[in-house]
Each structure stands twice: as structure tokens, then as C-alpha cells.
Length: 483
Image (cartoon, rainbow, N blue to C red):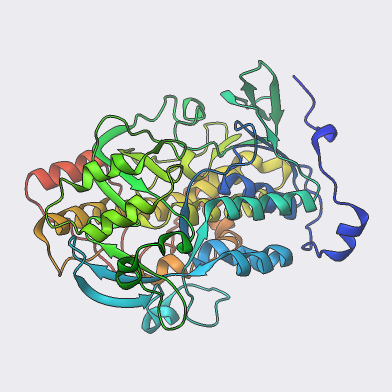
């Protein structure tokens, strides 16, 4: 077993760099060693937050270099709130993010509702839990590669380098020694006080956490997604008319029932659950040719898309898991390794960021002698909230397809703007509820999470249960205030 420290791969900012860039205040050193497997958004932010909370961090990533794949995602205020603690990232985030406006359309392109900013309902903002947001927060869009770059740059500033080209093939823990570890495909073994599985869908950590791998079940659908600079679409006059800039110069995303910067389609057998699976525009046009009423100008937009930009992503079901912490509490899953989301949830990246902030805080609150309890508390504080959001994604996926088939102008997604979603503060929530959640786990004292929809009594659910209800024609009623 190799020693935990790895100074040869640690990047240190130059004296000039360190003097001109302000680092956040760091908590006293905890003595906790944290090994993070996975260099996506959740893993990189977990590394930063664990550093800020005083932990000793090492991060490995299977890709040979920094992640450049993917297009864009929506990140809500609850995910970005932590940037208030990181001055340089806060400034950079303002530069790379852009305000998201949405207009609603039928599958034929006919407008249902004019463009409006993607915001939290201001009439309900004051009913949410504590947050530092003083005004109605706006939801921003981000380029996935640019977000990775921002997080990677900040890691370099604090002296942590992502170790690329190291694929984790197995996880293990030893409750007697108080250690957990991973085995790389090279045979190299690494260990730490806690191992954070942030290596995405299909993580091998489920063997330790759940005793088995989480089986992915096909939904029968795939999704085409692409993002590229707006200037590249201006060679055809009709596109200027159909996809205009707004008076304030901001571009509006058109949400078509069946399309939203993406096209849901019946799985044709070539899709993969990977952001590296690319297709040619001609392949997409074969799909749009089967959609009744699909306009020619939308096809023209697809033809304008660069060949290396369209992702063909397979949509699969995964059952929500009851816990993300291993039996010994030394391996903890975050992000997609813990919970996969449909794109229709609009919350995958946000919840991965919330995970990172909550976990780092719980480890700091528990201390080195209670790592195994800190991960369990983190799981207890997070699982029910994430299960609610996963459920929204599943229901919204169905709403979009029912609406597309019926050409309906009435159906709309469920609960996307709920104040309970956007105004959550994951760090403060961990601080406020750590002791009570721990008492629930150790002494069976009463405890109820308040980071779920107000008035809703949490009920576990399964994919099979939803599919059976739909088959029987039963309506799924969400009690409480989800919006």
C-alpha cells in the first residue's frame, strides 16, 4: 500500500500567483485524509471544500487529461452559494456563466409562452429555508468544460493537482484499521481515512456501499445534445428570425415539447451513457424526419452544428438508493455515483455540488475520530432531498413526451422552480442538523429533514412502483408544496 501523500504530483502556485490571488480562510487542520476518485464537477468541488475544511486531499481521475466533453448544464443558487467562500472562483463564475431565458413551444415550433428568465418564483422566496440570497435568485447556465477549468484552476491555487490517467477498478474498506482504499487498473493501491466515490455512473463503489452494482435499466429513449457558439448559426437568415437575440442582447433557449437544446428519441441501438459518444448531424436528421410537423428551419440549425458537438446519450433508469455510505462508513458516494438524474430534472450538477459542500462540512464537524459517522450523517441529510428531485426528473420526462405526442399547450413540468430547491444552503444545513441527525443514527432519536418540499412527508419510491402505477392508470399525486 502506497503512502497517502503524493508531493511529486502536487502543483504549487508561484509566489507571484499566491500574492495576487486571495484564497479562502481555511479551517484548522483536521488530520483527515480524503481520497477522491473522479474529476468531474462534484469531485473537483469536493476536493476544494475538503481543503477549505482542513482535510488532507488527494484526487485521481481516469481520463488522461482534464475533462473537455459535455456541453452545458443548469446550476442553481444552492450549488453556487459556496462560491461566496472562494473569491477568485466567484469572479470567474460571473465571467463564464450566462443568464438563462426560456420560451415554450409546441413540437412544430409554434410558441406557447414568450421568453422569461429562469427564476425562482419571487412570491415564495421568503418561505424557503435560510439562505444568503437577498434577492430573487436567477438560475444560470454553464459550459461544462469551462466549469471544469474554473475548478481545476482553483485546485492549482491551493496546491492540489488532479492525478489524471488513474482508473479505479475496485474499492474496499477496513473498519478495524479505520481506512478505506482503491485499486487502480495499474495494480497500484491507495488508501485514506475516507474514500469519496465521485467517478460517475457505473461506479465500482456500489459493490462496497450496497454489496452489489446498481443495475441500469433502459428507458427506451436516448437524447441528442449539442452546444456551440451562437455566431456559428448566423449563415442562414431564417435562423436569425426563428432564434433571435432578445432586446437585452441575451439569447433565449426555446423549450419545445420533445426538444430543449436536445431531442429525446427512441433508442436506436447506437447510444451510450457517456458524454464522449458523438454523432454526425445527418444521423440526427434521420430522426427528425420521422417527427410530424418538424420544421425545415430546425433541420437547418442541426445541419449548422459542428460534427464533433452532438452527443448521443442513452437514458436509463436507476433505482434511488437508501444510503450512499458503506457499512463501515469509510466509502461515500457523491454526484452521479450516488444518484443519477434525467436531464429533465435540471438538477444533476447542482446536487453533485451540494453533495460536495455537505460532505466536507460533515467531516469537519465529526472530526478524525468520527469519520465513519460523519459520512452516515451526510447521507442521512442528503438522501431524501435527492430522492425527491430524482422523482421530479422522472415525472417531468413523462410530461414532456406526453405533451409532445398530444401537441398539448397545457402540460408543464412539475416543481422546477420550487423555493425548497433553489434556496437551500447545504453547508449551513449540515451545521444546523449534524448533531440531531447523529443522535437519530446512534440513539434512534426523532429527526426529520426540512430540505424537502414543505408539507411533504417523505415516502420511498421505486421505478417499478411508478411504472406499475402508470400501467394501472393511476395518477401520481405529490403531497405538500413542491412549487
